[in-house]
Image (cartoon, rainbow, N blue to C red; front, top):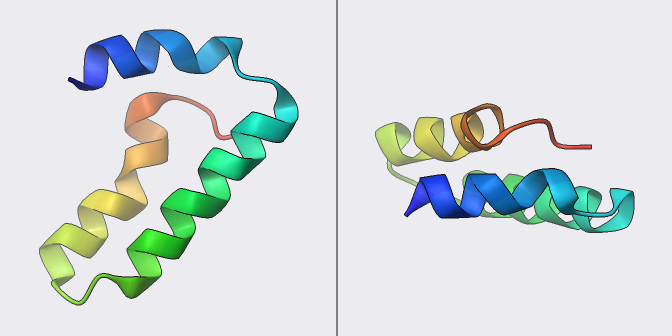
Length: 51
């Protein structure tokens, strides 16, 4: 699933890229499982630049 999503991310506007970054940050802060939290924190690097 991450490959099709990652293919679309470079086309996001700066505003949409920032919204994506904010959403990922919000969910990673709420995650209580340390391994899942780390995965959430690493997602932006995996999917491409935030903004």
